[in-house]
Length: 483
Image (cartoon, rainbow, N blue to C red; front, side):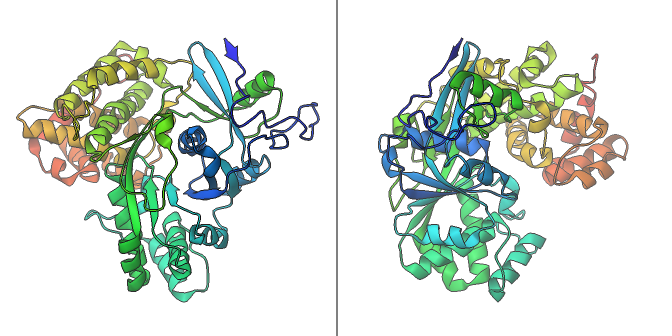
């Protein structure tokens, strides 16, 4: 079943636009009946997930007409160029087993090259701007092992030199944000919220430490102003959003009758939990199902361990067994048994109820994950999930393994995930990881020495535990093809 649902509150957005060589009009605001909302949110990290998640929630808020988003790209301008040609409009394709539905999302009103730091500063300093949201990936925060900003990191040091000299624009998302916050301080436009939407535990604290650390390293007075005037909101975000393909673009054309060069495909399920203050206001995201809580950690752990942990396990075990997507891997009974076992360990260490009495509903959450993972029409590629394993395992496998060991249990299911990652990195032709060179070198060693060296790159404490080293070593080869 295919349902054309473009006639949403955003309007069809395409009639009257210039037709292309195929006679199809380009998605545009030409006949957009609702007024274009003013910019009140600035976003760093314009990509598919932001558009399927935060932009969608904003478009569904009861006061959406008051909340427009100016979204800035990261490393390259391509997404901004493509989206700007459509006045920020894009089609969200919700892909369920029963078919696709299509809706135009109109909350992004300005798409900007991230290198345009002057425009970023102008918008962040504007009195109407209430918040900055972030999807800049885990690596962008550049925190050291102590949880504080690593000022010795080359890109951080480079940005500090640029900021200090006033001779150039910072090049990292962190540097650009601090530059823009300095402009807000100079303009005297008051407090603002920074809302981290990256997939990190305690992401509000991560953002706070990174931003205040860089601000203070540049200018102590700016650091003090950030401490006093910027709130950092923690969030748990969830919506599977695979890469858009040419076939997806063609499907939008066929179903909707217009050309959209930037559609986004996502699963129907979405979840957003937030905790923190919004001193300059926020949209009514709760109208779209967002949940506001006092304590977010139980919700973060539920998602990081049950959803993201299972994804990582399937990414490594599935590829070792010859699979390419989450749905394929889950259909493999060996992979599914490993996921269920890991979930049992994770569930045993999750609080039965979140602070404030909100039940985490873990059995229902597990059932929903199985249904989501089994959606074969969402081609969620294991190779994409497998990236940056050394970073992801610290949040997804290590806490569960540590908690199990602390309770006197083996933690075998969490250890199996780490072993699968080790097998994957030792056999894959190439793998993407911030520590790829170090992992490859460690994999050249043999036996327990190899296990200890690779583990040390993920968590030195685990590497120092002879019992963990022996356990992980015993699990190597579990998912080799044909096992």
